Length: 210
Image (cartoon, rainbow, N blue to C red; front, side):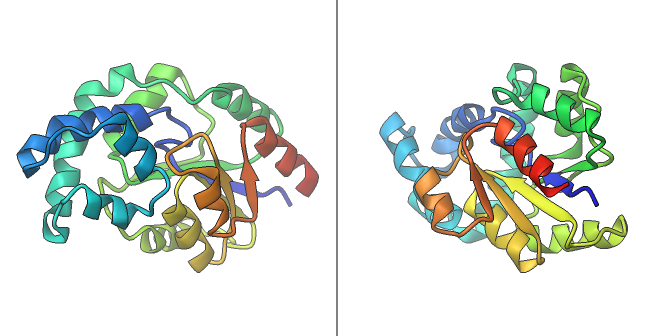
């Protein structure tokens, strides 16, 4: 049985990390913060997301509002977004292998479809955007039930520690990618099933499981 690959979007499929950083600096004054430096960015990459938000001095009760504002700004900049290096060839190869794939993101569905349409990506059986919902475990479980998937068949692919933690709580295997937000060291500390440095390695993992 072929594995079912469930991909995260930002930092995994789309090279949006620096775009997100641009948005964070646009929003910083609205939350009483000065712009963040490149040194801040590199430091944040080695921190769990909750600690990053604390460092950014965003109170927990204002996080939903901050995410909503960020998604609006994201929509204005989505035309600048490019796929991560090697992602298009990887998706094409997996499609040729008839590997089932889907996309689940905390971004908005509108932003996802705009990107996929512009990049002419049609590899995913379904696409769902949660518009900033923080509970990834719940959303993963909902999609598993909705699409009648077998958790034992699914491999979640993401670039953050919260991706690893949420997927494992749902009983899924995890491929953590090092080209996104979190560093390889931090990802490794959360014990993913696989840690990969380039998209070709994902193809090799799938081939080894067939």
